Length: 426
Ligand SMILES: *Cc1c(COP(=O)(O)O)cnc(C)c1O
Image (cartoon, rainbow, N blue to C red; front, side, top):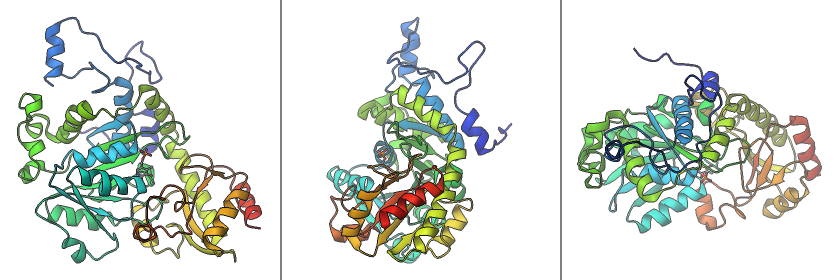
């Protein structure tokens, strides 16, 4: 019988850790590298992936798994794994299905770290990533596919460009070419958008942002929908559909079915590359997830107010927020995120780059930090901070105006946020 689907609010609170009689009601922190067995034979079966069980925290840990299960259910997926950061999540998500000589198509408007990962580090590993304007017509993006293309990538709401991805368009393109669509859903969170419902196959997160929500722990997550049929495109994905010599010749799709992709990422990539979260950090992340459904709507409500307020000011040159009716992305945001987009706004002052620095220095409540999407209001100037490796040309390609101020609206009282912005502008 299919498990009855629960509402998001209930999943935030109840999913994941399921205590048995006499066990801790609250998710325990299994701060242990190892797990004990009474026979050598039992331990051997675990190593052969013949049996489920914990033996070493790099491969699996009960605290980490419980939190992965909660995010998995929030996204409506079939399997998930936590990683030590969002960077590790995006790297594993792509590298799990790409080898040297392969190719990926990605929206150009993505997080600066991901853009570096794709175009610098993965390039050194022989994986070629073509960046494309996500708003380009379908026929144009179509031409970028090659026989060695293995995945398509984009962000639901791009950080910091706030471009909303047309998920259905990207899913259509990917599927027409027999490859999965990977969507980084960090900014929208499953509270506002569940990309699997629109055809995405794999979802990634930097849990560092809204999911944690308190700026306490860097982390990431990969969720698989289980919908992509690897066997139907077996020649493209030999890592999943042919024997893995490093695991006694296991064929992941044969042995693990819908869980093939996440099992391979765990058994192979996590085993060899080792970017696991600490159980302590997963515990903190779980506390954040318990209030995600309360915080995200408040972030959106406050951000909308602030965006409207900024838009009405003479000294503000432009405001970009998908929740504004005048936004170029309002239609896409209304379709994919009818309840709200995110708490992040970008805007530019009439005085440009120099005015941005002065304004930011005068803020009192809003702090200058290299962070977004936590409970506290904060600001950043991507051209001088997160994106400083990029040339002006690359900045424009990534959708980042050199004057762009990224304002992450927190969940304080919105009047206090507005008062701070007002005094800093005047
Ligand atoms: C922050 C961020 C990342 C990177 O995550 P870390 O947890 O900082 O490694 C990836 N994608 C998006 C959209 C982000 O905002």
